[in-house]
Amino acid sequence: MTLDAVTSTRPRDGTVRLAAESVSLAYDDRVVVRDLDLQLADGSFTAIVGPNGCGKSTLLRALGRLLRPVSGQVLLDGRAIARTPTREVARVLGLLPQTPVAPEGLTVGDLVARGRHPHQSWLRQWSRDDEAAVAEALVWTDMADLADRPVDELSGGQRQRAWISMALAQGTDLLLLDEPTTYLDLSHQIDVLELVARLHAERGRTVVVVLHDLNLAARYAQRLVAMDGGALVASGSPHEVLTEQLLAEVFDLEARVVPDPVVGSPMVVPVRRIR
Amino acid sequence: MTAAAQRVRQPGETVVRVGPVSGRVRWRAVGVAAGAAVAAVLLAAVSMGRGDFPIGLADVLRTLAGLGDETQELVVWQLRAPRVVVGALVGVALGVAGALFQTFARNPLASPDVLGISQGASAGAVAAIVLGGPAGSGLVAGAGVPLAALVGALTTGLLLLLLAWRRGLDGYRLVLVGIALWAVASALVDWMLTRAAVQDAASAYVWITGSLNARTWSEAVPLLVALAVLLPAALACGRALGAVQFGDDTARGLGVRLVPIQASVVLVAVGLTAAAVAAAGPIAYVALVVPQVAVRLAGGPRPPLVASGLLGAVLVVGADLLTRTVLPQALPVGVLTAAVGAPYLLWLLVRGRRRSTL
Image 1 (tube, rainbow over the protein chains, first blue to last red):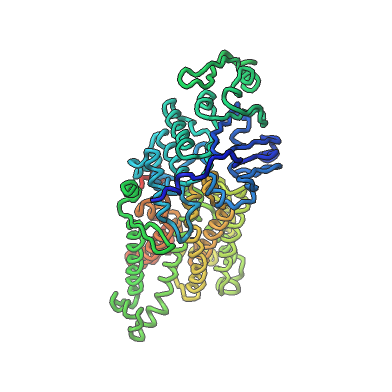
Image 2 (cartoon, each protein chain N blue to C red):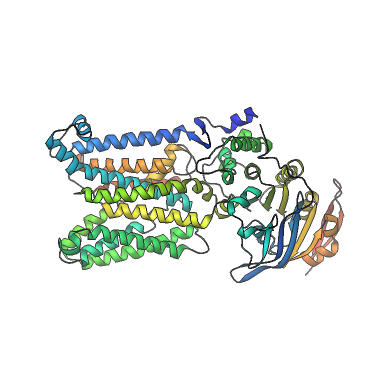
């Protein structure tokens, strides 16, 4: 049984998989992101952070081809994503919107099976690869025992695992997640991020995640990208980005940055909001 | 691995793989569709036997197979079959149209009745009856009324699409715009009825209730042609509908070309409704109720297209049979489907959250 459908076999040589080239993004006339450049290397784990309304989710939507830039372009494997067929994009790049909605009555097994949509056609609706990928994704995310349960009956943490399982079954090299920990309590936030980190480490996924929690972002991501007012203000390792100066400038926050006692990543201890 | 694969397979499901073709057969859904098909055929056969010249079920079936005598041939093929066939096809069209709208809008209230398309057809038909000259002449006598209904339904459908469109289609916006269109078309119908001559108003009234009276092959054949085109189109949309149900961002993330799919689903559903309404008037609540019954019987996350169509045929043919036999006087079939449909709608609203089983 081949697991190619699930396991990424691409070597991690640091080539750029996804790039934004002087991208400007707008909703109608309201410009949200201006002239932004970003390169995401193969096998990287990047967290986009920034204050509310800084344009981080908008940028993620543009990277996932959900929003067409008003100027500039997004390149997927060197090719303009806007001119790549949706289906082809969906075989390489998977994305999880902020609060995805499952139709009533849909079971976990069916949800994960929908992840195979870009690999299927009218005639080929349930190939051996589809079945293997779905089974593997369910087992891997620890959702196999819940396969027959309706998604709307799951707890918040289980539901997010089910959606990640669907993204895993989609079998894409790249995975974009928009605030996957929203509405979850701390232990489930950790649970979801551990799962994403395993997808990165054990399955070779290139991960881009928008996160609110700076400490969790610093702990799990290899690279932080900080945004403010629609522009990229800092990019680098968590140690390089999460400085007291940046917290003051970007988040209007007076804070101490100390080493996380568990893993040593930078940890933000807020003092007060700067007005 | 096989153990895990076993867990993906759900009970009552068979995986079929022949060469490049593969799929999952869910026996419950197949059973519901097959049961509905059998019920529709039986009801149709019984219906063709009932009337002033009763014919037994066996004789009806023999006549349909071309083995009846001359009188039976005339009564079944020329007098009763067109009515029953129009009823069944209208049921199929409305059932599938309702399933398409409800799945696409992610809202069980999205049906051609609520979205104003049937009402738009009524406005067209009433205009032809009231403004088309003295009763029984001119436009009204020929194909005028169905044609006007078709134009009314398509115009409303097109308006719905144009007004609801804002960088794509949103289910809630579609329903709200549809309700507004419904109100406008209703006002038009009421206004025309108050100004109409008494006999015109009476015939308009029968039409807007939805009736299968005096239907001939000249109504059945165009309807059959429309369905021959639109049903395959509906089934072709079926696979993408599963992904569209998730919401725009998720659907596009799964590689669905959203705008063409949304546009084709709405156009096919409007076309099916228009064809049905032109043939038999706006038979109420079929498109609203049937897909919701079908999804409860068949299980799964969305109304099954085939089962919805076949159950639609069962409802319309069955309601027509009841109005002609059990009830004291022959009522238009739309009265009965509304009488069943409206309480069902209330039940749906009161119960709020549906379970995936009946």
